[in-house]
Image 1 (cartoon, helix red, strand yellow):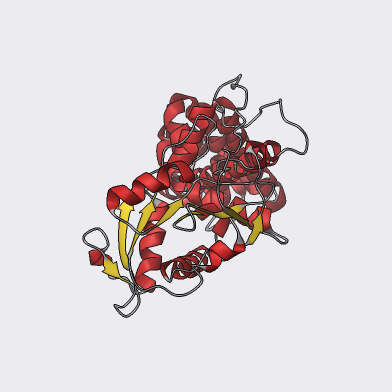
Image 2 (cartoon, one colour):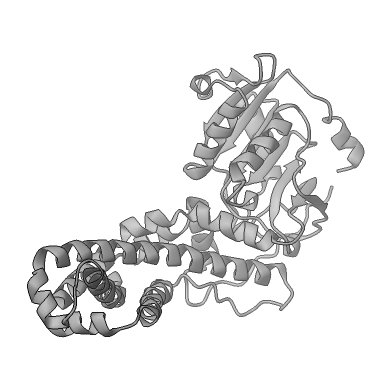
Length: 383
């Protein structure tokens, strides 16, 4: 698409109906928050629609839905946008997804259908300023302006982009230092590690039971009292690392396709996928560890008599003696929790580790399999 064509939408537009389609979950929550800050009445969004700004802006309607995904894991907005606009009677479409889109840089938006449909990639907005960045971008689009975040990048064939639309008129990417970290934090936030924490019931139960068993042994009291803080910290990191490794390995969460060129977009995306997986599982494992520590701290205070504890360690145990005892037993319990996680459903863990769209992409493209299918290379359609 030429710059001249984009210029047709540079002016502010107050007429027409704009449809905002969002993936369920975090995208829906953040979009509704951003629209509320832009002055769109939240009570009207799912009905006939609310007007942005002071009431003279375009009519805005929100729908929670997802666009179909192709066998290569990509979302082709150019194929679906015309039908969606006709079906809902919208003049323009804004689609917000939590599916990461990448070239060799994070894709933040794609525009198709002569500027009438735009897809925003939520993970590319990062974590720290995600809400503000999304609000600014939605504000531009609601005023009839083209997407402005990032810089334009040329996409000529399927190998140039992962997850996005090779037929997009305009693809914009995040540039500059820290763009990978920004996408990574956005991917981890989109995966919502708390969901994985809720699924790991077997892991948590075994960790607490094993740690509680250690509380009853006087040798454990003496060991926890003698171990230095530095060594205790190393043991903690080792236990959380062991749980993280086992969850990733046992549940097939590692993206390990071997048939990639070293400098390919697919390989760059695979690295980002793996770092996001490690970050997501590490946060969930840390939450497990913190929970086990708190439970064992309470149990040690209830079970172990302070006078008897003092006799065993020949020192005043309260409060740091109890804290170190809970710390030591929590580390041992968390290591045992890795085995307990084997009793949790593989499918449930996979689904909880990733957001809905990323989980679907991994299912479709075979990333959960030992021998995933060969890549499908999608080429641009002739204009």
